[in-house]
Amino acid sequence: MICRHVQSSGVHACTILVYFITVLIQGCTVGVTAQESSQFVETGAAAKRGCQLIGTEVVFLLDGSTDFKNEDFIQLKNAVATYISQSSNKSVQFAAVQFSHNFKTVFTFKDYQDGSALDYLKQEDQMTAERNTYGGMDYALNIFTNATAGSLYAQRFLIMFTHGPPDDNAEKYQNVLQRCEEKNVTVVLISVGNVGIQSLGSVSAVTIESISTIPENLDSLQEYPLRKLDVVFMFDGSLSLREDEFVKIKESISSFMQQHSGKFIQYAAVQFSSQARPVFTFKDYQDGKALSYLKNEKHMKSLTNTHMALRYILDNIFDEPTAGGRKSACKIVVIITDGNPTDIPTSRTKVNILSTYDERNITRIVIGMGSVLSLDQLRSIASVDTLAFVRNISETEELQTLICEMLMATAKVC
Image (tube, rainbow, N blue to C red; front, top):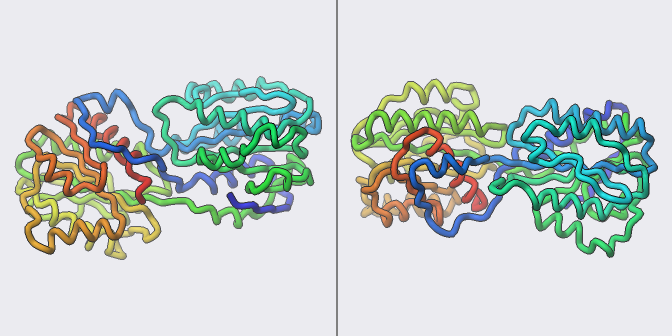
């Protein structure tokens, strides 16, 4: 964590949440351990599990000590409520904790999902006692730990508002900052006045003169290393794929992109058969044309030249400047196919395309459909532990959820 101290004034308190948190969480991508083995998914099983690809979590830690005037505490609650109510990013969820001599959960992630968070926040009374800051941080870590099962995170943020130095002993909560780091929790301290923030160690810190004023310029905070994700859908257009299956693949990709969007992630798509052709590029996605191009894409109905398509994507999507790819982004190709490759990699050129992908750290996720696929052949195309099977696609949610789970399980290799 980086220690940065900024002092300024002159903007309304709500702005600090809108600007500051947006700067932090825009662009975050998933960071979870890759699965250790291939997945075999029965029809409907993935859809029943559900999946949230980008699941950033923010916990507000509110100082309820006597140093805060009651009207300031109410204004702080209003600022948090305003930010939450204005948040349009469905992938971010919130919780809140008040700390003073004791600690209290104001609302949980589940409360936020159920729509009751703002009511609980409005009704929260100030504790008005001493300030046990380290204990509050330790308590808030349990909020992250006790998150709903199956919730996977791009990143976690603990946004702490305080009006004074800690009254409790750091030794009682040994290594709380280290445990924050281990749990991938970025701690941000927003202090009102000169409150001795140095005692909290190396956390990112912003000082405001009062709860009604915030820093006017937070450009320095944009140095946080936010990862970006460029995803190419490489989907099968071979003759063995039925027309209704081809349509369902397109519908699944379309729905997936609409449900999982943001400045951090962008998409391109290529259909492959005997040849490969672009359905839409990253630039098309940026221009808002991707969905219409995908809807109008016709079924090619020929062979399954998988290795040729991988070469095409490298040359014409990732390496083509006009295609809109980002050099700094994590690059992933999601291969959706119902057949084994018809261009078996016997030539040096075909073998080298997989080596090139590995050398450039471009992840290949393979989702095989049907029961006639060769496990060994598809495994040779996939990156390590990125092979999954679905026996058939009864609904578009099935493929969407499987894509989401595989992206979450492999994104850490970027």
